[in-house]
Length: 161
Image (cartoon, rainbow, N blue to C red; front, side, top):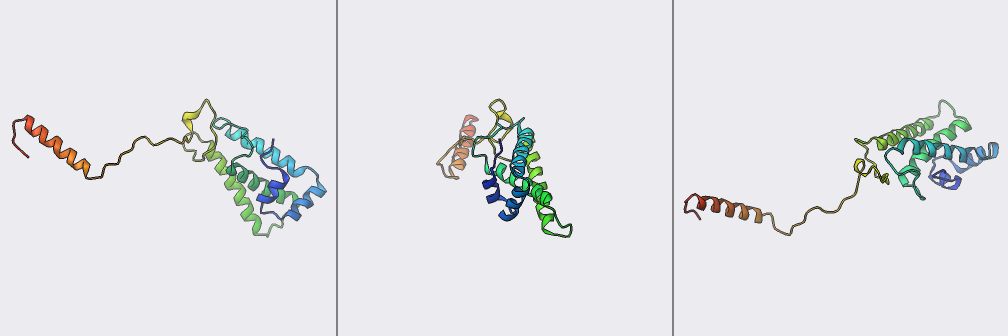
């Protein structure tokens, strides 16, 4: 199952819709096949940590990664002028997407917030609730500290305060 269909890919891709249509005219189903294949590769990379395949709609980060990777592949399919500087940026976006996928899959330093597997919730980013709360002013702490010091001095026989 691909995380994007052809229309959603066309909306997210920097590739002109005319170019995508031209690829589909020459090779019907090629873009859909690429979307499905790269979705499966993303799942394979993230499967040890995250609950894949992601429920529809897939997280926007995943959709963006897929779009960037398949956009580069589509430009290669269409043919690229080696002197075209735009393809450098498109390849860089695809490389960045794959690097971010690898980063997300890293159980130590993964910084992407995606739905975790139910049996590995300790290894990902988990949203928590507030663990403490106070309405005391910052000066109350000093008053408490002074009271504790006076109590300790009084226990030693001192007459402070």
